[in-house]
Image (cartoon, rainbow, N blue to C red; front, side):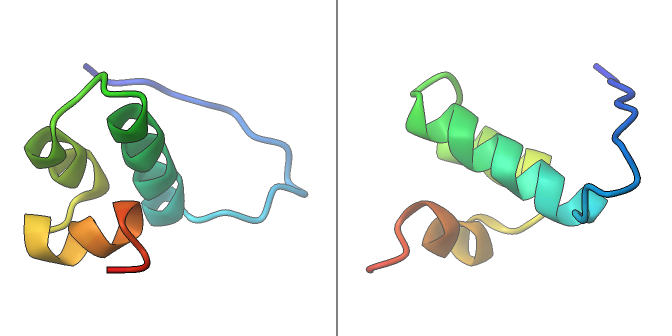
Length: 56
């Protein structure tokens, strides 16, 4: 699936950060697995996991 989003210029977020935010949110809502979330974020699972468990 491909989605195009037009954001106002004042929104200061990179595509990478937006992908990570989306992945974390969907994972926390239990809508996707950790593996799928890491793919959306474009990170290996071991690099992505601290995003969803920042205290571990």
